[in-house]
Length: 115
Length: 106
Image (cartoon, rainbow over all chains, first blue to last red; front, top):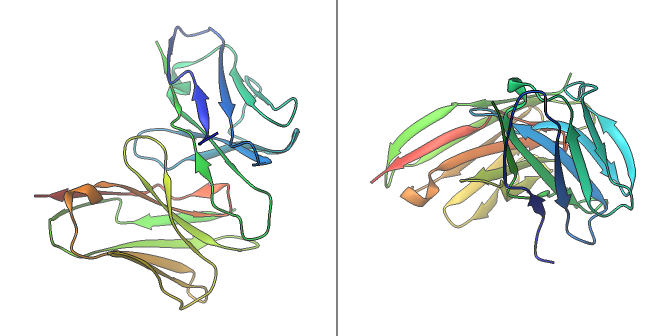
């Protein structure tokens, strides 16, 4: 296990369709984060998990977005009824929950294009 | 609300120049400030700063934190074309700045 994996890397969908992204974190990392990044912006926090518990959600995460981490390992981010404004790069990151271990390891991202 | 502001947003220099990137922040429960470099895809870690006035150095890159004035700077000396990237500053795991896009021309 050499890093954070995200799948798919690219997704093109039509407005109104549902999409799901998967993130496999580094195995010993119990914290997992989802971010959205658009052109010219830094990563915007969406939500994070500690093990299987979803501990915080951004107000950016509308009711069309849902994230799960059912067994505390991989996570999924689903967007229902996609809109063109959802087009972005969705980044996943993980780290250990340990004092001083604040460094996030990012996946390569899943780029979503909504037509 | 937590805030991280980076400046400049964009910078174009020539190889060999020295650059200074700025990051100011307002955040509750500050613990650390991190710098990442983002080339094409995933941001990669550069520095983590927790204490004021202690410079962190890695090759041509260095960074320092001022917790009284609530800012950090990232210096890159003798820039190379491979330094072209977006440099991100983050406080806590949830708050990133917009980044500085650095372009180094040959």
